[in-house]
Image (cartoon, rainbow, N blue to C red):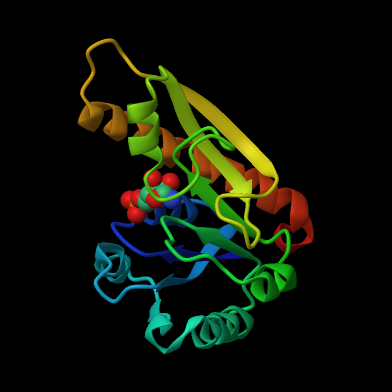
Length: 192
Ligand code: GRF
């Protein structure tokens, strides 16, 4: 089994989509879902799905939170860490330790529109095409080798809410096959 930890901070729709896909796969399993925020809606969803959940103590500081994350990763023998709406930057110490094992999804065609409000930035820009990126994460925001990208055109007259909904659906479709193919390439011996 390829064991994957999912990191969230909010709604958790990407976490849910990944966890559902992994539940149907014989090669992947979720080790735990960890949140940087106690009030993350995704924690409730994860619990309802029967997944192990954890709260990372960011109120104590980044070092403390990452030490707890490392403890969880090591204790569960996690192979991959998938950031799914995780709104904290990880330190270089952490990303170096797990280099090549941390994936992130971002709602733009990186390197365009980095940061928390990527969709808002796109909307204001007047561009007609944005999209979704899955990449390996390092300590910089929305940065690292790109694994997959898919473009999405804004329709004429489309509301921002409708465009956002289509973009999130695209995220849910792109993250799982990208993570699966990457995981199988890196950890093929785990599924023999
Ligand atoms: C997604 O758009 C993701 O790409 C970005 O934050 C959002 C999280 O949404 N990093 P959700 O929590 O997965 O529903």
